[in-house]
Length: 136
Ligand code: SF4
Ligand code: SF4
Image (cartoon, rainbow, N blue to C red; front, top):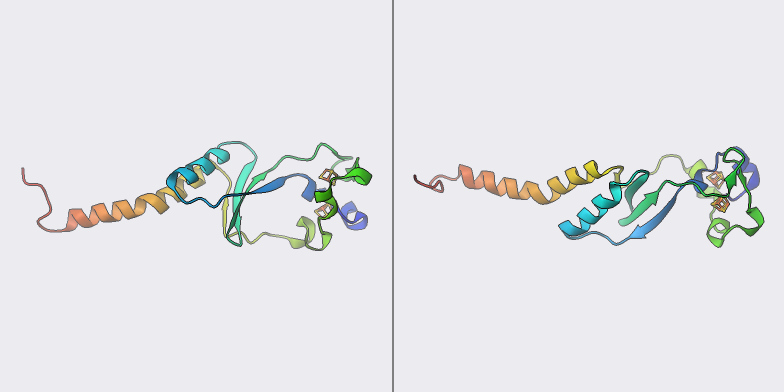
């Protein structure tokens, strides 16, 4: 929570999750690790400006009064103090993510397209190439 007057109209959107940067995945195993994150409830993964983040939708224990009050406002952590209300979750509206995975199935599908489509394209090219069939 940043500026009181604006935050009074909000339901503590910025206090109900936290997002951490993660390494950009490269290998299938890296993507599979992210799929594991996404097996967990209330976890999403998004890509913004080319950077990957894991997002944990878990509200701060100090957000009280129906998500309208920070009970440790005067002692709130630095990360809360530097959060700018000008471009906060309340004012910014929809995010413009490059990628957004909300569960492991979405990642599995992404991996299938990213890693397996090329293989199936090669396989179908091989199948349709005359003279490549095994003789029985
Ligand atoms: S999202 Fe913005 S308006 Fe809402 S509590 Fe956070 S800083 Fe205040
Ligand atoms: S400490 Fe206060 S300002 Fe920071 S996330 Fe928790 S409720 Fe929000």
